[in-house]
Image (cartoon, rainbow, N blue to C red; front, side):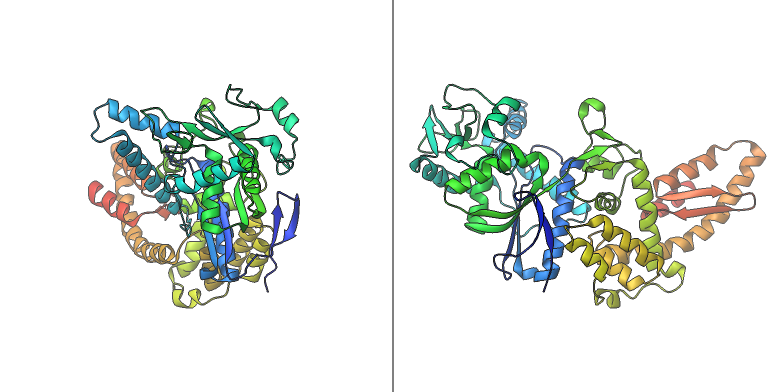
Length: 486
């Protein structure tokens, strides 16, 4: 019997996780608003709850866990991009262009998160697919006196829910005093929040009892969670920046609609870059894709497994600081893992045996202890020092650092690479000798630069040249470099 312990934001303590139905464990995580590329901060929640998803599947069985992560595809920024495209002469109606933009950014998101080893959730609903359930929930809240309609809007009466603020630990009056709330003529109370708002002709809209309009952000998650998971489900997750007002509002409207909603609330802490809050004004804001392709804080692309390793090295409830130094260290450790799987050039691992290996109990115990990924990573490092390849490979796969296919490809490519590097080192020694004689080192520098871009480090000893593959090594790029420069 499993003994998972999770910190519940709602109770502010770590509790034994007991699912409502161990044959149908359910989790909902707030997904992205798909107006642009996901940034590194967005990715932290994905990696955290993907790890929890993996743990739950291991403990209860793949077919007994349902994971829902939504896409918010109703948003003014999406509308603005579509409108700009239309004004620039793009074909199609505004609705077509909005759908096109959403499809584009959703595809980006799935590709970028897949690069970080994230499994796709069981369900990935789009808000626009659940307008009818949202309208039904709003009508019910109005009928029960918890919401009201005015000037084409529908709004939730915050003071009608006596437990408002319990999740974030604030009173309504404190929230009014300390937060920016919109004061509008259609509001009875400044704290009341929008469930439905009118749409102009150049905005997407749906018919409703309150006129043509579109839903507010908060009602979307409540309606989708209820429609896909039912009255009450096990876990609701997200970043702690969503605790107020989004999650607070979700709880209020769902409870007033008569839904039990989530039993356990989990929130990951925020991400910093080099010790500072990530922001465009500080010049340290970058997307996952920029980091993968080398347009972020480093001029070299950072492999997805390295990004995931760095993220898992910090417990989810602690602030995480992304640094170039951590990425370099993670890449070095992961390359050591691959070298062990390669048998250090001798006998590579038996992957079929590795797939049958049990997950190391200490890794499991770490994750069961409120998803202590830091401890799990430390245990994985210890396993690598014990030189137990099959257990190491099983741990790598279980933590989502690399899939079986990725590991096998890396091992095969590493073996082929080493054969080519031995020959290439001899060639480079000749290039260096010629450079010394001519005093023209441009060709040698070109070799070193291109090899570095391909994921290979070149060291010049007094009597030989040594070329070492790094974690981001690419056999294909090595072949291209060799062909171009020889």
